[in-house]
Length: 112
Image (cartoon, rainbow, N blue to C red; front, side, top):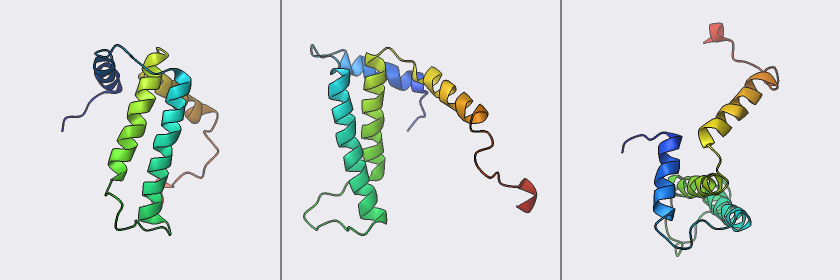
């Protein structure tokens, strides 16, 4: 599978959604959908790393699929609000590099 930029993913999702008359859901509906998808991801993580194994009757899903679902809904939300996700990511990384620069203990490269 080829790697895609965030911009390419946003365009691909927009092309997909644009073929339907309904278009994007409202931001509130997408937040509900995102919450639902996060719940499914949490359930999958709990099955792999928690104390709640799957029932034999439950279908096999993967965390990759669940994370993909979350990413799709986030892209839909960003597109519907005309948000450039690459720009949004740049803003948050700048925040982490400045405001939170000394928040965590850095790995001393000489110890490795």
